[in-house]
Image (cartoon, rainbow, N blue to C red; front, side, top):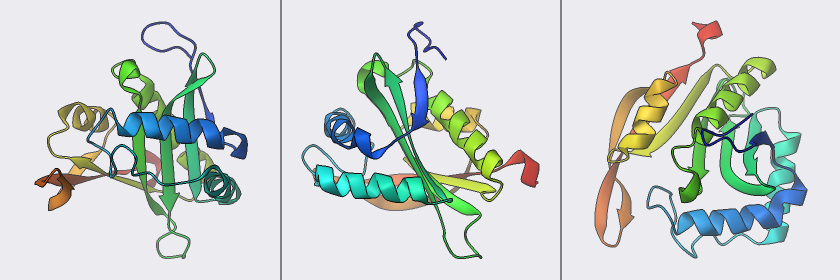
Length: 178
């Protein structure tokens, strides 16, 4: 697979071996965007904790942690978790982040496509949800282009430097499940 600028792109499930690189990625991306639930220096996860998190993802049929790799460097991450109880195991939520220098290169869309394919392959997840800041028009356009719709609005969901921001809840029912 290629990025829009022609670089080789690999999207794959993260492994415990990615723990240190993922922490570096998250620490960088948290300083590049106010769209995450945490800012610079607020991640607070050790390499050992990240290994445990990644092992948990790898062993769960209802979770996946995808990484986007360009030039052997993690440039994007997508974590998805669905419920483990029978009544909610069909429905989950994801978070997506891309390094700023790779915004607009098609990586986020490719990662969402990979998530949808993973859901179809597993046959268990039939609904995908996400939260996005109402002012993040690029992300909203991406999600809508992938078939997500706005299902609600949460006021004052995020507080950054004393200012409150709203989030949209967006969701997609997978085609094969309609």
